Amino acid sequence: MGPLYGDLDSFADGRDGGHKRDTFGLRRDSDPYVTTFTRITAVKRRISTTFVFAALAAVAPAYAQQGETIQRTNQPAYPASNGVAPVGYAQRFAVAADGNLVEISDGAYQPGTYQHGYTPQDRPGLGVDQVSNLTYDGEATQAPATGAAASCCSNGAGGSCCSSGGCQTSCCQDCCDPFWAHRNSVFAEALFLKPRGGSDVANAQPQNGIGPTAVPFGVVSSNSPTYSPGFRLGGTFALDRCSSIYAAYTYYQAESNGSLFVNPPLVDHSLVTLPQIGTAASDGLASLSRYNIRFQFADLDYRRLIAGGRNWYLNYAVGARYANLQQLFRQTQVLGPSMTGVGTNIGLDAAGSRVGLLGARKAANRGVYIYGNAFADILVGNFRSSYRQANTLSGVQGFNSWQTFRPVPILEYELGVGWVSPNCRWQFSAGYYFAAWFNCVTTSNYIQSVQTANYVNASNTITFDGLAFRGQRLW
Image (cartoon, rainbow, N blue to C red):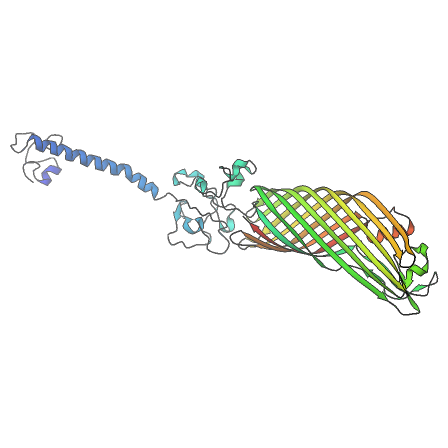
């Protein structure tokens, strides 16, 4: 190597042919080759080497920690156990046997990848301190959050969903909306209902003879509406993940047409004409009738989560309802050249408060769920009723108008099954719907009250039941 360093072996163990060296490895004895220039050059080399080793020593721990750090994903994954390969966390990360998070390089999904009970907050060094209870599959209770880097937890006002104050800490346990979360939505619902109870109107019957001695002789003609279509339109506005505002409009109408024809010596006896007018107006050979019933709802509710889990929820609802109920009846009795007609109109406008419970339970690894809801409405409104009987020859034979202000409770429930898409954007459901309107003035009750001049017990219950089909778009 020359006189400056000597041979490598002797330099490594501090020996160089017995020569003494200074701090920079230069020989202290007189050496014609050691000049001021070579000494400065050696000092530079030693300083450069020391700096390089110091830099490597400082960077090495950072690289070691970076090997454990979990990179955040901008696409949250929920649910991870829906039977198909999920995205985001569920494709990229797993929990190793030692409890550390490791990245799945090939993106393969293994059921049970996430183990129950792992809490990354205890390991802030991993860089996932904002992920809460990263657990999935059958044991999972919560979904992972991607932290502040993802905008899905934002409430739209520059803060997290927890900053709205409604859900406290449970609100931000995951970024992908779980099954229980309230979301914005619009929906359309098709109703296929049948009126029952007080909606039936018996209007005519065949009988043998005329007057008090006549006896019934045949099937009674009755107006009984069958299943008819209706609809409901509405939407929800999520205040936060645990509460929302619900608004909906409902319309339903059903109609029934009837007829009765007889041959002498039988007669068609009307059950809706005034008995004081006599048999000339109530008996004939044919009658035609029509009955129409319809209702409308306008609902505005506040709904909030009572309790919920990964695949179930229970909400309560409080709000207000406006209800409109209309009943129209017409009958025409034909006897020779004359006709006798009877018509009634009954209308209700009512408003009040409503309370209810709504719940659902979803299959663990499927989009299928069952649901149920029940509501109780306490409405108060005014019934306006009118009766009119007229003949083509003699004109108006009788007229009545009556109003009554009363409470009208309504109880309703719905049970059914539904399906939610894997991306949680669409929901479809089908269920059985039942509603009971109490303390109503019905057509049959009102006609009997007019005929007997007694309005004390002019009330009955009208029910509607049938199927409800809903399609809903969520975001």
